[in-house]
Amino acid sequence: VEPGMVTAIVGPSGAGKSTILRCLAFLESPSAGSVELDGSKYHYPLGPNQAAPEPWPKVTAVFQELFLWPHYTLRKNILLPLELRNIADAEARIESLVDRFDMAAFIDRYPNQASGGQRQRAALARALALNPSYLLLDEITSALDVEQAASIINHLADLKRDGIGILMVTHYLGFLQRAADTIIFMENGVVEEAGTREI
Image (cartoon, rainbow, N blue to C red; front, side):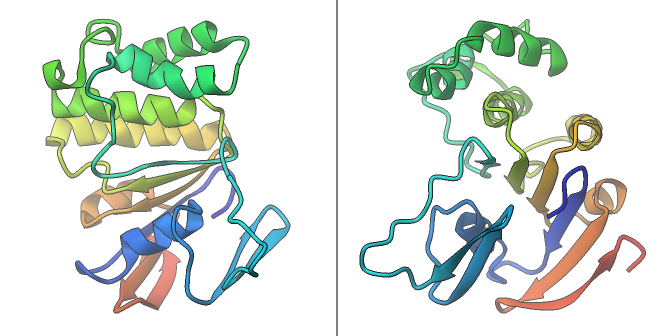
């Protein structure tokens, strides 16, 4: 996953796409192998006194389930990681993200008062609030209509220009053909093919 590039993983259900994303987000430990993050290498299985690193804010992720706190507004959901890290310019970051993702009309709604696309944008904004170097996205267009998915593609293009490295899992070939620089085909936990979007 290179800075300013979109790498996409595609394959049938059960291929291991979401699992590898969780391993790269250090939320799950692989049974073997290693994960390298900007020169730091983590070998698995970890030793008895080793703990998985906390990759954030360098690496953040948005999963298909979004994991928004239902009892907080969308604004508070985005603000929470900033508050937990005592980020001084938290409010300014929020306002910048609200503008960037055109969320002013719904930012103070609760998740159950927002559409799927609105919740999706809030989850993406929350991941970006920490100014990550790498963004991991798991099926983020699955609940979106064509217009909303096109909007996400435009946002990904902006993030690429910002130098963020993006790794996304998707089932939609048209989406990754428009958005991805590198495509990885997985099946049964194995990379079967990888290359540029021409493949």
